[in-house]
Length: 384
Image 1: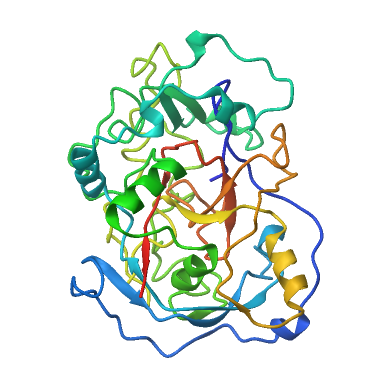
Image 2: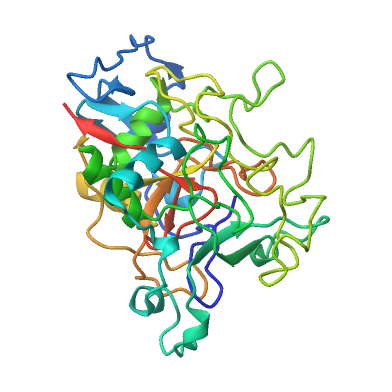
């Protein structure tokens, strides 16, 4: 699924295309193979909080030179990460609700947007909107009635006042019965607040990719090299064989007529997250590392970061990279190249073969850290 910017109130992110990278032919000879299946180690509640699994760390080939890979995923480079504990699933609605109950925390989407955090995502000189435009809310996938050109994501996304983690697609939606779904409509700032409360942290980009691969070396997908397994998609992603993207047939203008005539009651429902653990775990015991909902990670986003890493390392092993010191994305039209962005990984229920293939473990994007979305959540890690 491509990313989007917040109408007049919030800016977001689009599909990255960039330039320039060096080739690493010595890495291209690496076989796509499976490392010996690791033993899945669950926390006993003493060495780490329950619900976490041990990711043993080690050396791997980060990025991809596969034909599906975008330029921001290249070149492949050698990285080593130390072992760490990781949540076996996304943070769920029930878990986030406990945090909110104990802290009275109000998420970004529940607050009046702050102009200072918005304007850095907009072209210089953009005039400040009237006060009436600053209303709490978030970006929501609304879909379309029929097939459309896929070069304008504003056709299927809208900023919806009243959308937040309890109401992922708008004030008339709810998470009732979805306590075990990933919490969405949480910003990077919200994820940090939850992490502090939980005594954990967001994973680095390198830790996330190592964990997502689950012991598979340079496989195209988190589960291997074939998109389908036994004729089925092994992750919650959009099945274009059943419905073209971004078509949601039963668009209902009565859902939120004051916001958009296109808002669909099915967005976030029939087309939305699934319960965590609905699909097979990977070699480390992690569920939904790709698909279901995007995941915030700690690093600043630079489209050219992999190129920078490879060049600076001189083909040597990079140990526990912590990400760049700033953001840079010249390919996001209408957004300043140095606008603050954090990395998101894993893709979501909207990703598909026709438009976005970010359910690949090497795929990466950048997003405004203050912009919650209806397909974006997180999971956390804890150092040993």
